Image (tube, rainbow, N blue to C red; front, side):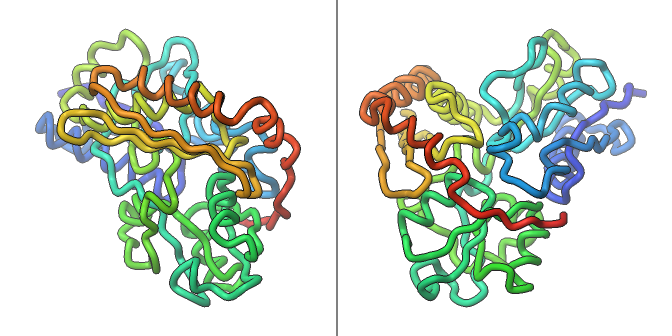
Length: 321
């Protein structure tokens, strides 16, 4: 009998769905029973903080720190994350060793008073916890009131239903994994609303040098997703990206080449700089890094200073998850 593989995850419905998908793929790949795996729920600070923006509390690491501590001290064997929640620098002794096939990376509008952002009435309230989404909404519709909207997917949907906001924007991949894609009133084209680096991709983290785990995960790793994410994460790293910075980045493989597009914005959405590049798939990380350096050069130092100037731009809606 195989030793149980302990899978660490956050406790939200979406996180549990992603951990379950990982377990299902491992079961199928290795013809193992469900009881060969144990899903361990770990409370993380990012889920406990509901009264202020994550950009003011520490950024992306708030969704991973406690899970990575459990991985380092041996309480779990692997950790399953949403790739867009992952900092670009991992703790010493940990690595990302598998990516599952990427879901649809688009964002989706969920509207109460109108089905699309373009149709929503002037002055309507849109809730989002993402600085990128807030900036992109303001870029499209500067007349709207954009507010901080914390909570998991179900919480945010409930708040829209209750009239706290006229709409919100969520990752279509998350809705799909929850079996709720039908609630999206308008999946937004990527060229209008570019996604966060890593959006739609599940990643699996493990201890460096754990060959048993590496061998198990190799069977479910999706190479094209891994290549695209190598580019996007390099772009993010070149811009020192975190939850404090409104930026977007998306890589895809077309005709054997990697094609990347990226964007940085000021929080008010008024100013932005874009970059597009492509090259051999084998150069994925180098393409992302060069794109980050190029867009940083286009923007200049004053642009990045404005991120600090605009901090606290949104008023906060306190939600209870």
